[in-house]
Length: 197
Image 1: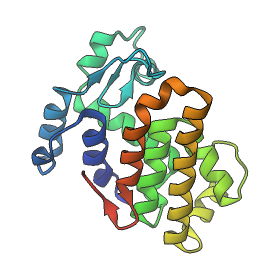
Image 2: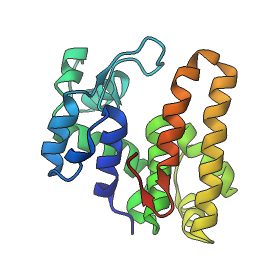
Image 3: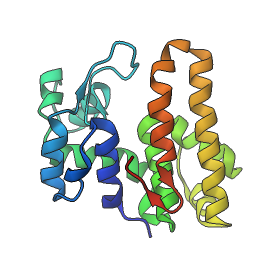
Image 4: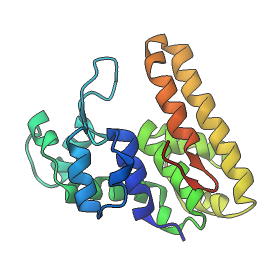
């Protein structure tokens, strides 16, 4: 079965530009290093303010469930590792029920897809899998992920994800400034494992 912790360094590396030398640190220390370069608020990015890949909207939704009345960008900038990790686990990894995905590479590409693209990261793979595109990972979706040839499914998902980001740029040319980075990230999720280049 897929292991959640294997995806954490990859997410931090691509969201923050974390140097490779820090990828062997314990996760808490790795996150502390990542936070130094992890805040972004590019006006062209529809996600708005982010810290280590967590958008302000996501952090507000997470904290609202915990009873917080409001969440500021200062709150986002000071997000603790435990909250960041819990968001990745409960709002993205668990959304794909990835603990039950038998192949780590499939879990990596699917969870990273939903992390980067929201519900599209479930509905588009559901279309590839030939199951109902409802944005909810149930038993039929999970069964479709775990049946068949994992390498072939991975390749189809990879190609579909590249087509998806190309489509974003076609529809909204202002996003072309991000395409090189998006494709680099997608291409570093391989069936053989995660790459850092």
